[in-house]
Image 1 (cartoon, rainbow, N blue to C red):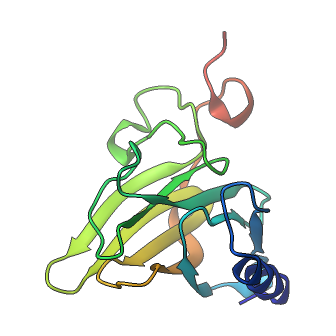
Image 2: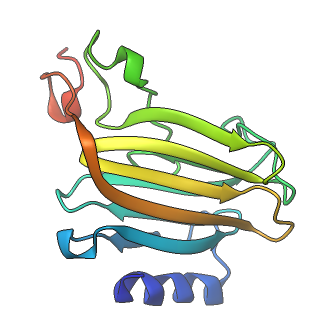
Length: 169
């Protein structure tokens, strides 16, 4: 894990992170690729994964009673994501990316849940980067996440519009 991210994550854990806490930035440079980090999220923890091109994927931990919660974990926690912490981005699925102007630069490839393994993976493409957030949903303590970033075989660039590809007007 990048030295800055380790120090920031340690500081947040020691401080007892809440939604009002600072947000940890995981800075990924081209020299770090392929990148991998092991995290254990607690309710209210938030991260900004900054990619080599400067774009970010934010992800944070919520309780499963949150309207953003999508699946059941043994700890009662769930992960949400977007361009900014605590603010869900509109979902652009791969099948829709060529058909309409996007309101986000994040292409959501989908979620894969491995039956019996207690593992669930959310996959994204941002520009030339593929990100996988793998959750251990069988953990009773926190929400362990493995973050991986690698160069993508395909590229996602939103159709032109306003910043981030959002539609004009």
